Image 1 (cartoon, rainbow, N blue to C red):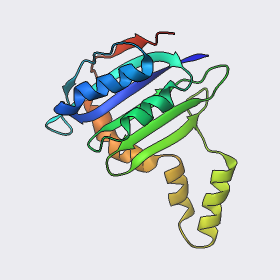
Image 2 (image 1 turned 60 degrees about the vertical axis):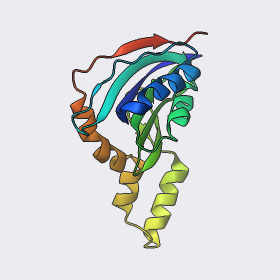
Image 3 (image 1 turned 90 degrees about the vertical axis):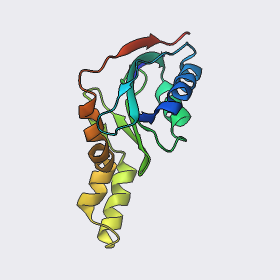
Length: 164
């Protein structure tokens, strides 16, 4: 099964850009040359977007390949298909990686066990339920990445299809 998705590199130091391309090429099995533009939200960093098509596990493989670089901010999305739900990965240097399952309309779908655990932590006074739900929905990652997303409006996007 194949799916489509988008890789958003929100900010990366210039020296890291070719390594990102090599990592993405390794996952997708095709040469990758991203259109890098300056990231105004973080002077001295660069941004790029790549629309991709590949196997259903490609989003998780892309996120795994990129998550180890400390100064990198990125998101990877995968559209839902007949065989799998969609996915969203967000990563920032401060927060690490976030993963969510997304439905056909892009809504985040939170598994029952994660909701039960959040409610249990709130019930014992360990945390606040609203804060737990915000974290399950990825709000801390959205808050940190939002300025970088807006800085990329109008940036070029390149389509790449995985070699199967």
